[in-house]
Image 1 (cartoon, each protein chain N blue to C red):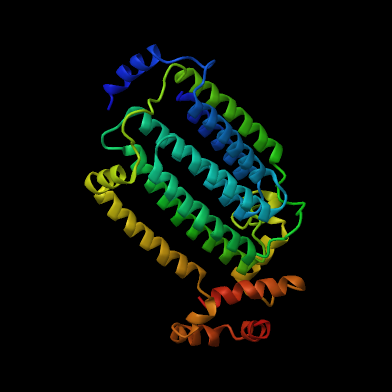
Image 2: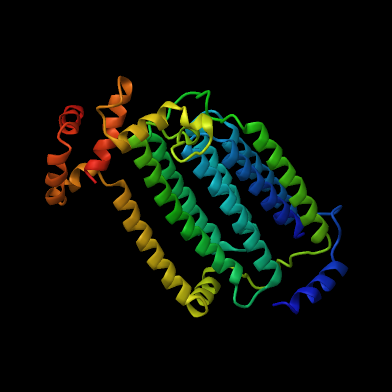
Length: 215
Length: 143
């Protein structure tokens, strides 16, 4: 892996044009990237919370198109399925369950937004400068066999990465159990804790009527 | 394709997500910004994997792992946000100052109620604080 990079770099820098004559894939990547970046900016700046989630769909879908342009087909479809299909739906459910206002909410941004803008602009300038300076003369060779098709993905995932894959399934199970435990109603587990509940109920008698009245 | 295009796009997306994490007040919007940052990292991983032509395809495998971990993270995060909303009635991040150590945080009404509920119950906190402290105490008593 390490020894192929300089040779790729040397061969790619010789027979490729510069920035002034971009190929069709580059133009498509640039346009989709601008749309993605604009959607991301609207996501973090809009004052309507539901619109933020819907603009996030545009940003994530644009990233899926970018994966397709980078010949990583399987990851593009996984992106569409998991991010656009489930995570945004989960976020919309979360907005709905926390009773987010439908219209414009004036306090969507906290008081330190100018500090945040400064930090984000500074890090964007630094990162973009470093990245452009480092990879100015490197090109991705998109020709040849497709590197991210479903066959290739299945081969490397279940041949080389099968043990981390199984560990990841255990992590997903743990996250599922954790989410259920966290979001369970507190009233349902009073039956399981009756032995301790009676002990504390006798000691903290004055708090109990208020609790029942509020319920 | 020039490698600088996906790299610069990933850097800018990461910084947009960074701005969202720092500037947003609603916890769910902060989670959306975290998703943007994770996606920027995914784009970097895919671009460098395609560039290096790795035989193990580490970048794409790590992208799949990141997507799965992001799904787990959003599930746990939303469960925590919903639990906080059920206990406190708000999901604004800068109102959750129970563990803040500054002086003005101790004078906020939310922390006073929480302290009253933790120390000696609802009967010492007067007025409006009685309801919220009792609510917190209910959550603690039925756990």
